[in-house]
Amino acid sequence: MERPPLLAWRSVTLISILLFAVLLLLSGSYGYHRDEMYFRVLSEHPAWGYVDQPAFAPMAAKLSIAVFGDTLFGIRVLPALAAAVLVVLVTLITRELGGRGVAQILAALGTATGAYTFIAGHTLLTLSFDLPFWAAAILFMTKALMREQPRWWPAVGVIAGLATYNKHLIVMLLLGLAVGLVAVGPRRVLASPWLWGGALIAAALAVPNLLYQATHDWPQLKMAAALSSERGGELRALFVPMQLTLFGPVVTIIGAFGWVRLWRDRRVRALAVAYPAAAVATLISGGRFDYTAGLILLLFAAGCVSVEAAGLGKVRLATGSLVVNGLVSAVIALPLIPVASLAATPVPAIDEVVRESIGWPQFAAKVQNVLRALPPEDQARAIVMTGSYGEHGALVRAGIPRVYSGQNQLHEYGPPPENATVAVMVNIGPRGMDFQYKSCEQKDRVDNGVGVNNELQGMGIFLCRGLKQPWSVAWPRYQHFD
Image (cartoon, rainbow, N blue to C red; front, side):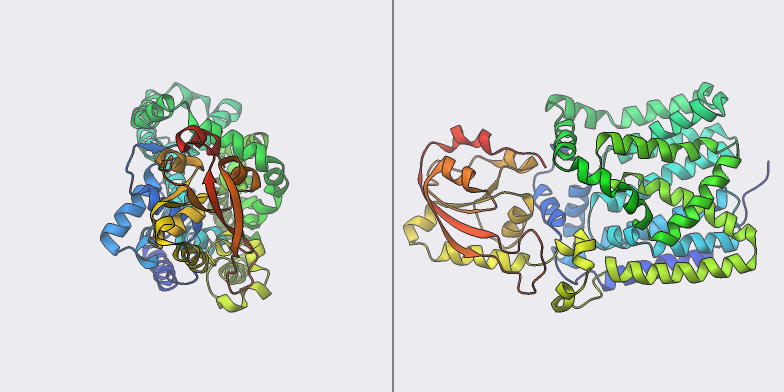
């Protein structure tokens, strides 16, 4: 059996460290993303799981705040570290596929400068940790198949089991591999006790997750159904274009050559099948277009091996293209454009993370002003109701008390007290306000100050009075998943 090439550890380490440093340097720019503020709220309620996600990301937020401080910088250290680890893992996959120094450096460079790597490394998202989990699982799969060493399958099981605490999406990778092994082989792997041992390890590690879901009426299935119902058509339409742009078009083009390389190698042909299998499953379910991101990096790693084998001219072309790809990705995915100039660029329309990181302090200040204008007796019994976890998290972060929302896990932290006869309501809608209060009057409107068109911009802030029914009765009507 041929040994894998030597690892270009100096170059790869340098690229990883530079990525980590750049992400930390820019970590305080713009503002919190709505997901980060949501995780911050959830971190104050430790649990094995939540109705819309497992516990890993909220607990990462809790650890970050405890160790690095309750700041933008503090909450973004771990995502930056995860991105640096991702670069190393993709490089190791490239090495397992036969890539020598040049291929490894190309893989590290392309991964480090991909748009989704920047997004996942800059902001605390479930994606931040899902990408390294997938890369680690793929690395061990590749070792097991390329080296014909089945003892690596339990390592796959460990990673898959742990990954379920971040997202259950790792199941798609496992199903993709299973489809590949059944369809194109090597089918003898399916008879390996090591593989089934790995499956048992994954299942055992995931038991607390499964128990939480089973004892809470499978809320993540409801979440998936709600996402597919509300945005399934849009997500399907965006799937193909986003496959080209998740890490930039150059990464995708190299990944296409990588798919061919995997298909031609009978040892790892099953991994080539895993990508179309995952893509079909995503399209059928109406899932997010980034569900295939981990497999795109696998294809890219294989493609870098093909580029290296094609000779110096192709290596130079790929290197220059990846540099341009990285520069464009950085402008789109990192806070490089001054916030006052953002609205004049297409970046907010392209990058949802940038768009939804703007305007939260202005929003919280507007709500605070409405509360402060109330008479003292009204202030004592006033609550704030928000339609989504973003507004809820921003108000909690600003220190505003008695904030409630019916969205996802936040519904579990209600209902409001029965003396809440006065409410400031944002992003609720006329039906939700009229259902519970006799009169509602718009008091202000949100302006993020820079003209970025996001969910906050132009949002009305309403003051409602005259409770129609007890909150304990009305609260179930406010629950919604999205």
